[in-house]
Length: 427
Image 1 (cartoon, rainbow, N blue to C red):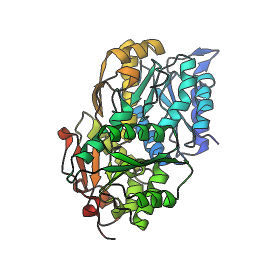
Image 2 (image 1 turned 135 degrees about the vertical axis):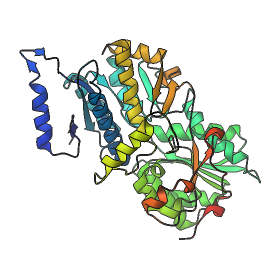
Image 3 (image 1 turned 90 degrees about the vertical axis):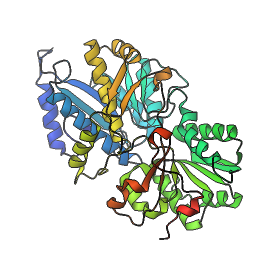
């Protein structure tokens, strides 16, 4: 069942949600809205299912943003309310949720959803009505339909499929001896297709021989047969595009079977969640990840204060305790939307979208402008590697000496440990 999160956190009781809805309803008297009527911002997130490790931290980020905006006087002088439904990490649930947000809840503004598959499911509903949204961390969603009022909160730039794994393959071919072959595997969904298509193009451009190129069903969590098939081909490089549950499944299977190519990693989204990294611990030593979009060393205006607030509020709430990677991008997506509303002094979606195309935005994830298809005009992806993990504690995971930025050069904190076996700590 969908769970509504209004101005109140999803973690509070249904009674409080009903009370909040009642309080909102009394701002309508005789069909005329009072001046205190909130600006309603609607979206869906995966608060259960495979995306839950990220959906929950994104929601907390938006709650912090809401509170920050309201403490500063609101939006257009009105309080802000966030309405969020749990899409259960299932794209099929998303169209009905966005139709409900628009037609029943009559939200003023839209955000999200989170994730490539979910955004792809929402866009037809949003585009049909000529509305604006800022999708959160979706890979190349708009490249087919080119909807002019979609904006992307992920720093992949104007060629998202290629840019996503460009750094991974640049690093691979710089190694000595140079790798010759690659296995490419990913989840059979919009995200996995986009990521593996880009990886294949980058591998071919780098002159690597693709010896394995397959996708597996989204429901598959036992990746043992896939890993065995890859090991039998003995590729020099293994590139994986996986959601959180199958990221865990792949790493565990590779550890058990002893898959040890010269370089392994890719877009393993499970390695972005603190609880899953703690679960895997030393098994992720040596993995090279091109899906990281945020590191705690970033010093953009407001981001350290956001991390402090998040980490304090996350205590005891069953959400990612650190909030690295995903959380700041939800806050930034809302910042962009709010800046456009204030800049236009309007909730008109056309005016808001035009403003977003024409202006630069300073956010907690840095300053950027939007370019073609609503993507960032300039990319800023990262490639990182884990090494020297000796346990499964949060102290291990939060030790930045064990989480090294390999690429690009302006954010680099260390060199790759190569081959993969050199980074493995016995456990």
